[in-house]
Length: 305
Image (cartoon, rainbow, N blue to C red; front, side):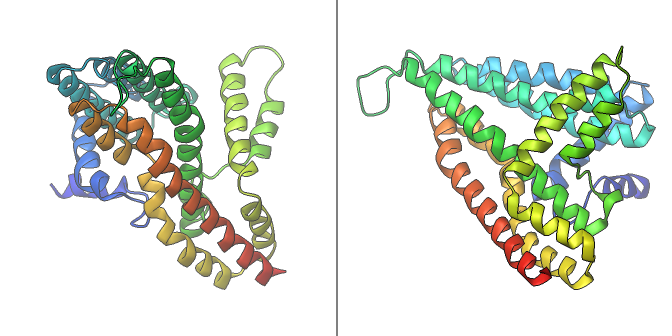
């Protein structure tokens, strides 16, 4: 038990950035699976691929309106999330970290929710809009497209960026996965002209991902350049003090809250609630988190000027 607890604690990045549900539920179950599959000599990439199929299957189940299929969808999505937690823990346990693994890990969650949004759009298509006798029709696809592409995707990427920034200021470069667009471009340029197809694919897409994060955070980019030049400890501590309250939003804007709302909406056959919640509630949290973080960076930049 002491070894299990030690491994579990080692899997936590920091108390500031860990979500209660992950600490007490997802991570312990994921670690049990990780230890089991490690004994069976199963590669982490296999677990990631399994999570993709489980998440896609969950999305398909949410197309149906009956309770049985939706309960199956809940179960499959929970299993997919456990696998997602497991593959990272297995990679750390075994040292089996590969570029393909990084690609699959970043790809898996996108596949889950793509299937979920498509399933909900198809489910709503012939249903009536609440309090009317008008069918959703093409409006269901518009609703889910706005929720998925214009809300969900940028929310998740910025939440991840802010979490990595906080970890960088808290634990340094080794304790964070904070990356930059320029670094990915330099890596891409250094790759051989021929071959290296998967490497080129990964770094091209990852560079675009980093660029989208940096483009939306101009105040942080200015502050980060000034802080790197000064390395003032007082400023680092002040940044962490201002950033720490925002970590709850970085957690809320990732998997758990989305999944819970999706479960409730589909199980009660009010599937339209999930994309609407994404557009209204999650977007409001995103805007607050973004504006507060940028204001913090502007204030600290002026002090470093």
